[in-house]
Image (cartoon, rainbow, N blue to C red; front, side, top):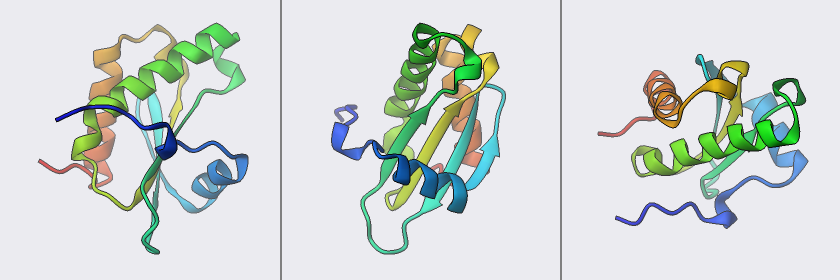
Length: 117
């Protein structure tokens, strides 16, 4: 199975991010916060990645978003269709390694009952 993350599936507009923030359910972990918004109207599944300015300069924020993207890319096959996810990096993610972030994502997906074996 090819594990690519298509650009067309990523959230881009501020309004899309805001919809997930306000209407979605959140699950907090050590390295990230997972927002889940279920699409009941047959929309495609989307995913967004965010890192706030409190984490540091642009290079640090970009690294955190790369970690989040890579973690999701490896686990996307187990996430059911019809949900929009938003992954927001936390301060602990600045010094984290990729496997730690991936384990945190898996734990949160299981907590949100979005994990398919």
